[in-house]
Image 1 (cartoon, rainbow, N blue to C red):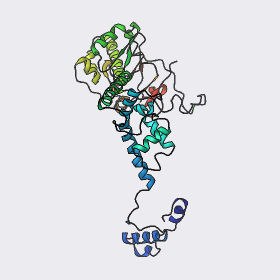
Image 2 (image 1 turned 45 degrees about the horizontal axis):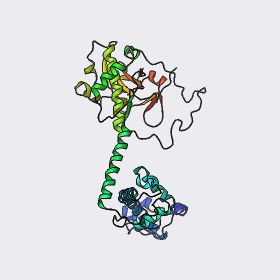
Image 3 (image 1 turned 90 degrees about the vertical axis):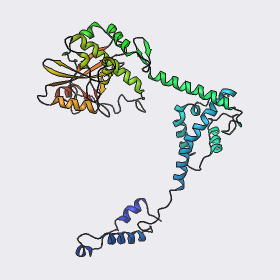
Image 4 (image 1 turned 180 degrees about the horizontal axis):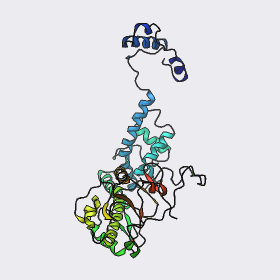
Length: 389
C-alpha cells in the first residue's frame, strides 16, 4: 500500500544517502541512487522505480466517461426535445436542456448531486436523472429514438431549422450597435455612409477643439497616500466577470471612434494629408490605403514641430478607462524616451454611438511621468482609469 498525506511527509525524511558515499564518490552513480531509492520504497510497501503503475481509479474513469457522455447526450437530445415539445406542447418548459446557454448550468447541477461520480451514464439513466430533477418532460418517453418519441424525420428537421434561425437571430442581436437612434449590424454597415453621417452629426465644439488641448484630469491618489479612501476589493466588478462582447461589435465601436478622430483631424489640420496619417487597418477600409494594426497607434500627424502618434480608444458610454495592448505599450515606451521627438497620445472618444454627445479628450502617454500622475492602472491586464476634475 502506497503511503499518503502526513505519513508520506514523515517517511520521506528517512530516505538518506549512505555516509560511505562521501569517501567513495565525487558524484554517486545512478545505479547506486536507484538501488537506495528502491530499498526505501520496498520498506514503505511501495513498488520499485519503473514498476507497472496502477490504472486510474474507478472514480476517475467514471467521471471522465460521464463528462464526455454528457455533452454528447445533450447534443443528441436537444433537437429531439425541441421537436417533441413543439409537437406535443408539454406543460413544463425544459429550457435548461433545450437552450445552449443552460448546458453548463445543467452539468454543474448534475455534478453537485453526484450524478457524474458513481456510475457510467447511458441514455436511459441520463433521462431518468433528468426526470427526477424535473427537467425531462413527464410524458416524454425515456428514449432518444425518434420513432419511440412519435417523431418523424421531418419533425426533427423542421425544428432544427427553426432552432438554427433563432440562434442566428440571437447572435445578430448580440452584435448590434446602437448609433444615432438606430441599430447597426456590423456585418452589413456601409462605412462610407457612416463616416458622412458622423461628419454631419458631430458637434461644432468637438470638431473645433484643439489637438493640443489636454483633458482636465484629477491627480491619481497613490496607495500610500493617507488621504486616499480604501478601495473596495473587486469594486466595480460584477460577479462572474464582464459578459463577452461579440468581436464584430467591438470592432465597429473601434471604427466609429477612429472615424470621429479622422473627421476631427481633417477639420483642424486641413493642410495635412489625414488620409495618409490614418495608418491603422480601419483607415484602410475608408481611405483605400494600406493599414497596419501592429504599429501601436492609429494616426501619425505633425504638430508643434513634433510627430504625434495617436491611439484611439472609443466607447458607447463613458467608462473613464481604456485598455492598451502589447504593440501600444511598445510604441508608448519608445515615444517616452528622452529626445525621441515623438508625442504619444490617447484620443479618448466617449459616447461614440450618439454623435451629438460625442466627446474627444486627449490623454497623456501612460508610460510617462505625466501619464502616471493622472492615469491609474486598474484591474487585471493593462487597463488605465482616470477621473475628471
